[in-house]
Image (cartoon, rainbow, N blue to C red; front, side, top):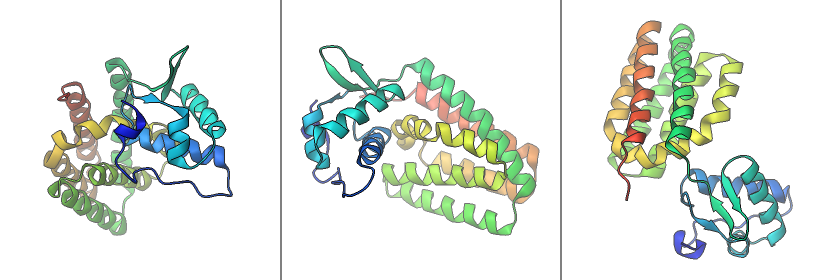
Length: 226
């Protein structure tokens, strides 16, 4: 599938100058990949990408090389660039590490959170529930990421938060294709987590978050594929 057939009209914003163009092209392409506007296995044609982004081919070429180094794109000799297709093992390894990080974050959030932090979690949860009700997958994924980021923030451990940031985009990448399948159940689990954090029940918060992230991992492996 070529780029012109794979993206809805107006999906790719043109980049404004001046600025660190190479970095901005990289970020634009990475966002398209993590949201799956560019699908795993999709052929990435430099000229088409440059046209959509309103830039020359050089920063696109440099961005693709960096994306290849970072594991988001595969550069194949004599064929070109393709969005990386994650293996089941890659997904399992990352989502298993995510479970460890998130479970500890939930425990620390239960130990440290005050009423203001809990209110923010309530607001984010309501936003996610609304997105699920409206069947807006992109908004659901964004709300889910924001909710988990807030739990991580409330944990108050900067090293843990930095480790979580390193895997955050890949978690979004894996969560997007199962967001609809997880649906309301995911947000029921979020509500249960808020209750445990509010009650300062560290053990319960850890158990809920571990179960929640493991459920997502299993759903990914059992996902429906078109």
